[in-house]
Length: 174
Image (cartoon, rainbow, N blue to C red; front, side, top):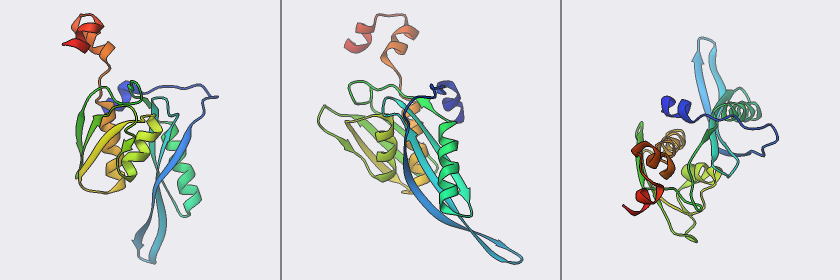
């Protein structure tokens, strides 16, 4: 997944409006000789709702610091995803850890048919019509990562036409 992200990483202007969505906050415990040390881990999705998205994880002793660290981490890992008419270009399935997902393009007016963690990523990207199903693990960390992995594996019709050396109409028609 890291290799896919490096290929699509983008730099955005400072005036771009990024919206962040908190996916989850978990309390984590580190057991030491002196007892238990409690902390928090937060996962955040940041996007401009126009095909740019990033995910970040932050850990700290208090919730607000963990969230701000996660937002900073997400802003450093922004990637561009191909979106056409509010949906994805083609069906895609992916697996990360124990989480498996399938996302399919949908007709206009369908909305986002997806669960919690997947919905946050898809809304941040700017997808308005999509059908999605998660199988296996419902761990929000893995669901966010597998959703981003599936979106990174999407291929743009213009790129496919250029790679094959054919006209764009040929890719759509045949």
